[in-house]
Image (cartoon, rainbow, N blue to C red; front, side):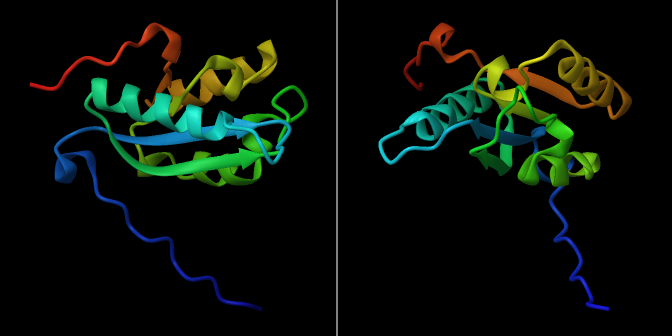
Length: 133
């Protein structure tokens, strides 16, 4: 039986001085010219900065349908959702990057409540960058 190396320990919110956030990028269809993952990352980063969150990692599920695949069944995100103590919040650029069905949203909300994890949908069209002091 193969041995698995232990997961690296991630700093706690207290060690970082701010809540830890997992950024999540998802795209159903990947093409050679798509810019959506980069736009999603930019929205997540802007949201995290505004909310004073420390992004600790990214879960990227490219080529995965949210309509057909629950967040708990996605290759990258599901492994993070099994480690809820590793972060304090999860950030998506839009609601539709997280889920596309009411049952999946209900599952995600129940998970967030159970693990006291904040679920954040950045909605970047409502965010306008402001100058830094």
